[in-house]
Length: 147
Image (cartoon, rainbow, N blue to C red):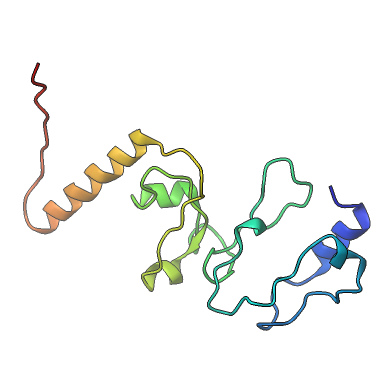
């Protein structure tokens, strides 16, 4: 865990900066604890290490995985919203904003998390029904078990 002084330093850093800028110099004490990558561009996704990890002392605001914007639930979609839109495929996902989703950027799932198969089936059926409704019909699926 980071010392209190370094946590305060990180909390004081604004979340906006220009591509290629260092948040703090390499000589800064925090520079010895936290790595800064210079190969990131404005087109890079937010690094997954930014997001809150269980047991970590530093808590961060939820932001869009693609652009870094934050906001209320009507702008920034989190897990419950993503599931309600049938876009999680049963996986735990990073937040995504309305603008990025509207531009066609993909919902990004957490790596290594288990898939909720019930949620995946529910979303699949909802998406099929929505597609059929847009074509004027309804899809009903059933399975026959042959023994």
